[in-house]
Length: 169
Image 1 (tube, one colour):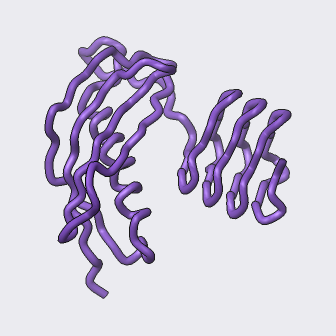
Image 2 (cartoon, rainbow, N blue to C red):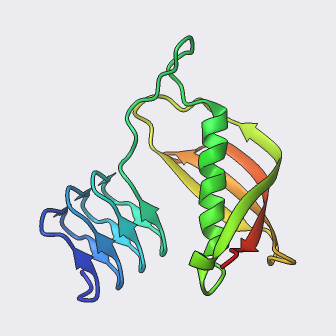
């Protein structure tokens, strides 16, 4: 089922059994696999590839999946610092989704605790990040748990702290 209140570019390729909730925008050159569920208020940018039987949560922003990362002098693995940065960015989106007018706020990464890397992330792996608030945001400070998965395997986890600040207008 595809909501009539969603915008899907004619050059997007949707598999069979794809479910799209209202207020979702799917741009050109997007491939979505069979039996994928896409929540409301999702934006999927050009070049994104989403596999079959996936679930995209409401409010998500999906961009093209980066190609293999290889750094001079290192094995071909995704560096932990990049995993933590991506998890922090996901947490920032979570924090901004908790305010009525997110375009008027900045989020700042303040700290990380209990960060653990469980498995290596290799070229071709797709990382799915999950973040949840551990407590209500108080005085502009948010504490959240972040997890990174490749398939069903937990590859990285951390407790993160962020600040949300109103922009100067």
